[in-house]
Amino acid sequence: MKSVIQRVARASVSVGGEKVAAIGRGLMILLCAVETDSEAEAEKLARKIAGMRIFPDAGGVMNVNCTDAGAAILCVSQFTLAASLRRGNRPSYSAAAGRDKALPLYDFFCRRLSELTSTGVERGVFGADMQVELVNDGPVTIIADTDEM
Image (cartoon, rainbow, N blue to C red; front, side, top):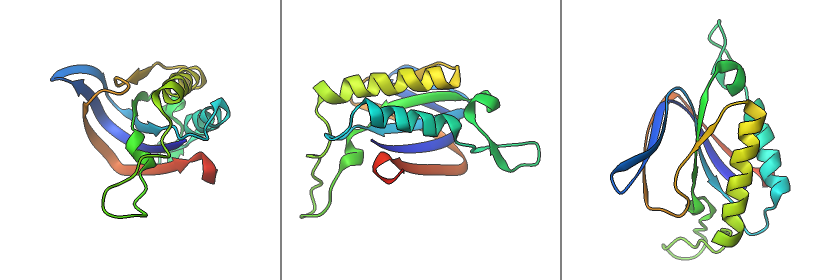
């Protein structure tokens, strides 16, 4: 699984001009399942994100995980993270998992992250044309790929 994790002051997702999810301080996660992924990769990534210490402690050092920081989480499916630019100028998304595989993995990931952090995970609308707004805090942006963990 591939993901982009951003610490945010706030974030929201709209579909067709209607806001479908919004959070305050927390994590905005863009998530992509690739064809070779299974629940094992989703579990691995959920555990890693739940434990990541990227919120500041009293001394201003990034030393607090999202649970201890009381952070909210918003997760949006993002198949374009699987883009390959190896040939030509048009990205290829052939490595991205198809809907039948990606949607159950997205649901599993969100459910496990919610369980691991004891907080709900707000979601975008899988497969929809979404408008994502966020205010990156820090800025803190981390790219995580289970193939590299």
